Image (cartoon, rainbow, N blue to C red; front, side):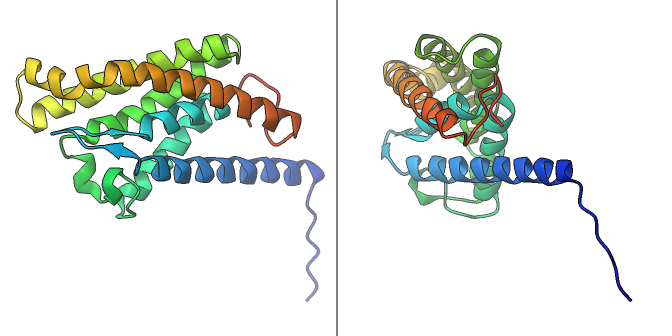
Length: 199
């Protein structure tokens, strides 16, 4: 029996865009996993390159796809792929003392991209957006750290916030500069859309 399959040109375009988005998100999830291995050990929460990767991802991909890339990153780690800091993985990391920071990456990526989409994809605005993202990550991370590690609020702030303020601002600047520069190149190469939200 002969079957004739008709594929509308518009369907091909939609499927192509979906595939491109999936590839982008997978690449940036992998980059975040690589950056996570760049770390400076501290007693409870290490300083790592994860937040830099989160900022770069959100600055390039925007809110929805930036957040989706972080969901992919968290999911990979949850099933045991060693993409978290110190080549760790597993659901126990997400429910452990530092798991709140990983959940914070998802929220931070969304709001970082959202601010840029509602304003302009420029380095100054990206600096503002990434600073907001940093604050979100620190807040959510510190809340889980406090309750899981059974710390006082002062102890949680001392371990999960104060050591990261200056380095966080530096990473916010780097994420803004790298993210906007790379985004402009990708737009010129037509690898992402020249729209408010990357596609």
